[in-house]
Image 1 (spheres, one colour):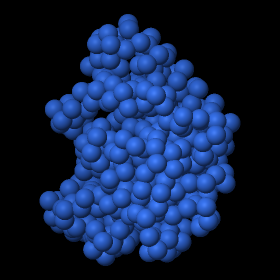
Image 2 (tube, one colour; image 1 turned 180 degrees about the vertical axis):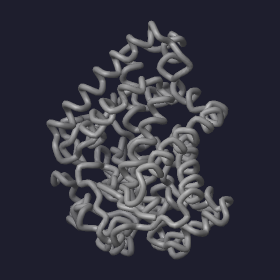
Image 3 (cartoon, rainbow, N blue to C red; image 1 turned 120 degrees about the vertical axis):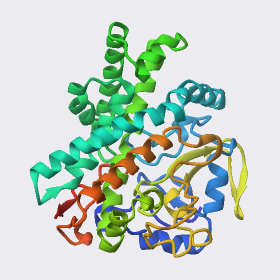
Image 4 (cartoon, rainbow, N blue to C red; image 1 turned 180 degrees about the horizontal axis):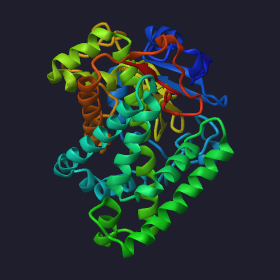
Length: 393
């Protein structure tokens, strides 16, 4: 296998809103490429939109590996960088977990949650207004809102939100394996304590409903809780910050949303598409030999689906590297596709819509306090969260 590039470019050295030039060059040469991961393991990087969309839900790919100790890994952190699950039962296990969780994210439940998301957004913006200009929008809004929302949905006590945030950041640390492992263990232990607490303090929340269903063991509920707490807010933190940066980098688009709130839904879809979250992509393992483009992928190979590259494929998106808040019919792959479409997609959209409707309405003159090129993304985060977002108005 020829080595083309190392996956996971150093985020702090890349324009925070741009597709890395090396990746753009790679994409121009084909849809699948041999690469080395951060830890030097061989893998295939898929950058073509149509190929990624087809492979996301392809049952010939999965998260499990027949020989996990021999499998390539994205990195040496604990979460999502290597094989997960039982190779022989993976698809059945995945279908069972989705069936258990999907009702809690049903459209009716999400619609009912929207007023509360809007109220939480208003409270944070009230505090931002009291604080006054200048401010750090990442700290004031992008960071806390998704945490508050997922805690509310799951039933995490308000007073625990800071502890949960700390553990979640530790679990997702891609540069410190020991911290990642410790954070993951503590997050799981926290989940177990929370399940036990909910036995005596049941409410209308996901954990209470999972307990009341009687279909899951306490360990399963704790594991689901841990994964939802992490996955349910981490990417949204990044999307709010990066989305605000994209809009503020072009004052005309920020003002357009203020003048015409009907543009908010299309702007949110562009926020979901345009700024790459910066991670190494979605890892999958080939369960059998298959052909991608003109390449034969062998059983056991690591296949990395680069959603950011797919969302900037010029064969699908006109002028793909331009952020356009009025872009229509954007079939981005940020939430996956088909049978593996993200169950939390509607919740993320509700949060993003609430943020950008209220933020542009209340702060029409908000602007970046530093050049966009000075914004930096955390190298510890798999989602490339902004370290700060200085603004003034």
